[in-house]
Image (cartoon, rainbow over all chains, first blue to last red):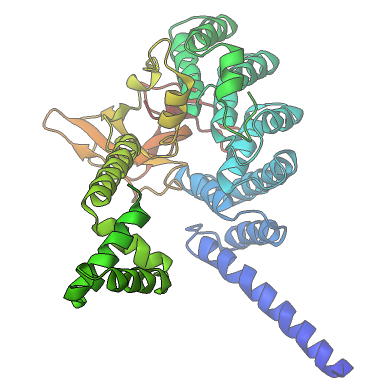
Length: 218
Length: 207
């Protein structure tokens, strides 16, 4: 094969690779109802830039659409989309090796409410793939959003996970704390009480270790 | 008596039927037996088929199949129940209830129940807004598209919709008359650093 042919093949590969990114981006942004054409183009550029980095397009389109629905200005939408892309990229690193789109979105949401980045890594370590960390991350996000100190929230969630709590049980913890705080209980106290409640439903650590399926830490 | 002996007797019978005089002649019997032993061994599948045709074996087989069917049905029943339509959660109120796992539930049962964790959970949203001409639900689950999830107005003036949501934390709001976005007055609020317009939060999980 001569050099000309090799170059032609490389060029064809690049064209095909770019074509595979462009439609996905176009599908997501073609419907963005941003009236200001300049602002729409800026948002589309942000999304295209994120897509080129291998980030999922859907959460970024959703972020842009949120701005449209909330009647935000084009510039504010662009900034919001860029921030979301940054959080998604950070979450991808923290939740390695191969987080799902749902996990990335949950990770980005957690970072948005102020969950410290290293804690995402700790949750991933306590709940290794292929177990989904969507629910632990979502509950962590909710607890921190209600005012529970992130360190305390992480301790309780990982303790429950290590005792074999199901995602539903972890979610029920978040929902209970949410209602307790709404009723006037201090966030920290609410978490303490509700975590004990869920913990009391779980088997002893020894039994959890014996019954835990392979690939899941006791 | 083993299955192989049963098969051999059956082959002897067949041979004797073909040579009626063999039953009374010792040499003929010896010839028949020699023929039977020398005959090629049936293939594995043939032996399986023959074995299945025997009353005792087919009875056991039928029982085994019935047992397997019962087991499969029992297992499937558990997973189907998890995916069956559930009592809808209410975005404001019921979502904050206790998880209904009885004390002392064996871990294995909890893991089995967790098989349905990823299933969509019907979730009800309610807004008391009699003056509104239209109400839509917008949130991270429908990409904030107002046309995706319209609410229905009841005679009382209360608007409602029940929609399946994936388990997890969801941020949402109501869009009134196509323009005004408002948080759910009955649900906890979510901050919004990006746009500065707070929404509401619902924690969705399979009960």
